[in-house]
Length: 161
Length: 162
Image (spheres, chains in turn green, orange):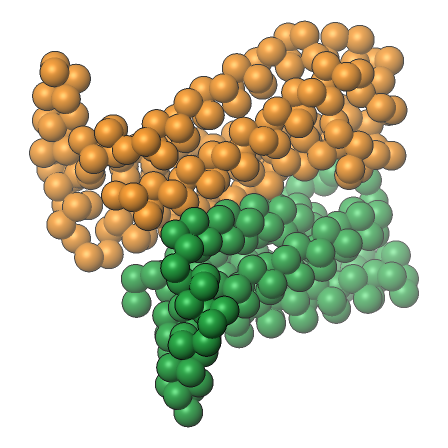
C-alpha cells in the first residue's frame, strides 16, 4: 500500500516539478541542515546541563525556557522541509527502514523535550530538587544526546541504504 | 602540475584507497563530518544571532560567546579531520570541484572574519557587552551567518556534483 502511495505521489505534478528542478533538493537540504544545526545545538546545551557535564551561568530553568521557542520553530521547519523532500522522492524515504527509524527517534526526542519543558515550567526546581530527580535528569540528558546523534546518523544513511 | 601529482599520490595512499573502495567507510566518516558540522554551525550561529540581536538579547555577549566557543572548537576539529579524510579519498575530484573550492574559500573568509572580530570587534566590549553591539560587530555577525550558510549549501552541492 505504501508502495502504491509512493508510485502515485511521485507522478503528481508537484513531485515532478520538484524532481525536475536540479537546485531544489540541495537547497531544501541546506535549510534542513541549518535547522538541525540550531535544534541539535540547543538540545545538546540543555542535555549537557541535565547530565551535569557543563555548569553554565544561567539557571537551568532559564536556559530551558530560552531554548524552547528555538526547539519548536526548528522542528517545524525540519518537518516542512522533510515533507518537501519526501514529496520529491517518496520511495527513497517512505520505503526505507532507516527513514522509519529516524522518524521514531524524532518522535522520541520531541516527547523527551516536551516532558522536560513542561515539568520545568510547573516548577523551576523540578529537575534538581532531589537525588532521584537529578538522576532522572541525567538519564534523560544522556538519552537526548544519543537520540540526537542517532537522528543525524540515520538522516545521512537514508541516502546509502 | 606538481600539485596535481601530490594529490594523486595522496589519494593512492593506503587509507584513502580503503575509504574509496569500502562500502561503509565513506558514509561513516561523512556521518561524523555532518554530526560535527551541525554543532559547529549551531554554536557559531548562536553567537551570530546574539550579535544581531535575535537571540539571548538579555545575556552579556561575553557569556554567550564563552559558553558556545568550546562547542565550536571541539566540533570543528572533528569536522575538519573527517573532512580531510573524505578529501583524501578523491583528492583530484574534489580539488577541481567548484562547490568544494567555494566551500574552502568561505571557510577561509569565515576564519578571517572571526580573527578581525576578535581583534577589532571586541574592543570596548565592556561598553556594549550587556546591550546592543556596535555596527561593526553586528556586521561581523551577519557576515558569519551568511558565510556558514554558504558553507553548508556548498558542502551539500559537492555531493550532487562529484
